[in-house]
Image 1 (spheres, rainbow, N blue to C red):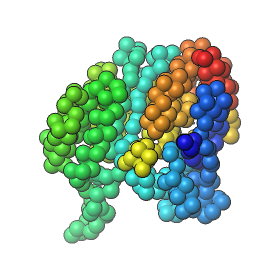
Image 2 (image 1 turned 60 degrees about the vertical axis):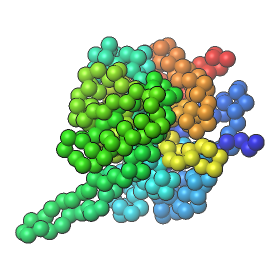
Image 3 (image 1 turned 180 degrees about the vertical axis):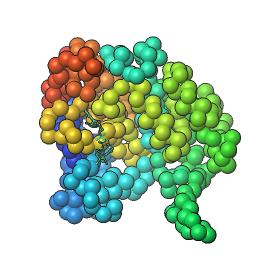
Length: 368
Ligand code: NAD
């Protein structure tokens, strides 16, 4: 059988720096575990604009569609701020998500023991936390029509439309239930059924999908505003949270901060299964291109490495290897290694990007 394929789009700013460390882990998997990927690389974002005058060429788009998984670093930077909206670096990312139809965005909020005191919440609230937010990514109020700023009488009115079809709700609900079965088998669905018709439909459809196909999974419903409160009050009550595009945008950012630094947060965006059974998939750290530290070898590569671990788990069914990487990271952090973003007010001596990657590879070696 052919090796699984990975398309690496490192992008801009710290993207290529953190991706260099991911490549060390990919190479390690081949050398030490016999798990060999066909890796190819291409340009996205500002880097693609500089080379081709567009943030994503058609050829790169076609390679992404054909790959078993795409790993993306980050895009953007002040150099591109004045570009026309249509060729801004972020448009490359949006095109990938749209044309691959990546409708389920998975954002884990996992607290590594060694960093439990780093959260802005009390240690006992976050220690051992491991939750997953599944956000619908391709519909809802960010895409609904009509939208725009219109003239109404003698003033302007801004309009966006929250719109969900049953099938859009059902497919993201299924993604959440499938995920829950691989975790603690619990899903909490969040909407505003008390004030929004789209929320009533959301609640109905999630319940129908559950009753028909996933009766073994524990399902609860919560209004999204109450959910936000519960997330900061006692986040460990949740396992998988499924919610729409807008609420998911807010709730996943809030949940992310439960665990500390942006430099620790991975994500996955999944679409429908391809002919080989694997989902269309793109994996990327939550952070951006961090122009303030780019080129200084300071960036934390862990979010990007954890994104590769998610690829192993969700695209290649290699959960054990994903856990091996997560354990190696836990070990390195427990040994006290910290990139600058993980140092508290008391300070300490930070390690650089490459040293953090090397330490994780050494911990992987030690795991064999
Ligand atoms: P950012 O995530 O790039 O940076 C926010 C802060 O977090 C900065 O101080 C940065 O130094 C720090 N940081 C981020 N990642 C880090 C890491 N791995 N290690 C250590 N510190 C890290 O967000 P921003 O500054 O708002 O945006 C910068 C650029 O990135 C903009 O052009 C923005 O449009 C773009 N952006 C891209 C993505 C993406 O590619 N998915 C996401 C967000 C922002």
